[in-house]
Image (cartoon, rainbow, N blue to C red; front, side, top):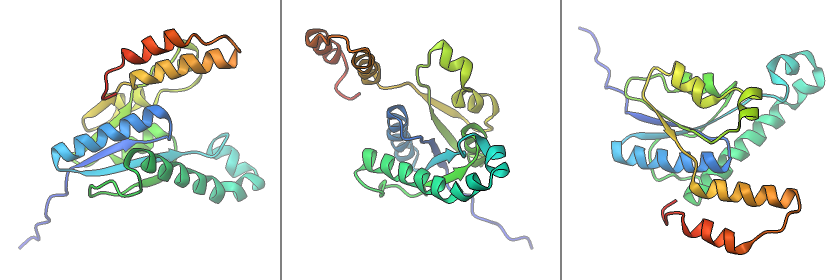
Length: 188
C-alpha cells in the first residue's frame, strides 16, 4: 500500500526588495493570501555587489557575504514592519532570504502546484530597462504558476516627481502637489 501525502497548502509567494513598490506588492500579496486561504511567503532575493562571480574571485568579498546576508535579512524584516507593523503577518507561511538573482529565485520558490507569484510591475524608464533586467518580465516568461503583477501605488509617481525636483533644487509648487495628492484614491 502506498502512503498518501496530504496536498501542500496553497502559497502566495511575494517578491520583496524593500522599495516602495515592493511594499505595495507585499500588501497585495497578503490580501490574496487571505482571500485564497493560502500561506504567505515573502521572499527577498539578494546577490553580492558585482555578482557571485566577483564574490568568489575576491577573498575580501567572500568575507563580506555573511554581512550582506544580514543586511538582506534586515531589509526583509523592515519591509514586514512597514506593511504589517511587525514581523507577524497574521497569516501562515514563512519569510525567506535567498541568495541569487531575484527572477530565478522567485520562479524556483514559486514552483508548487497551487502557488501564486506576486511581483511588482513598477514603472521603469527606457534607460533603466536597458541597463537592468526586469524581474517582472523574467517571472512572467519563466514561472510555472500564475503571476500577479502589481502596479505601483499612484503616490509613488508623485513622490518621485518631488524627489526629482528636490535633487535639481527646483522650486516646489505646493498647490500642484496638493492637486496631485487629492487625485489619489484613499486606499492607495
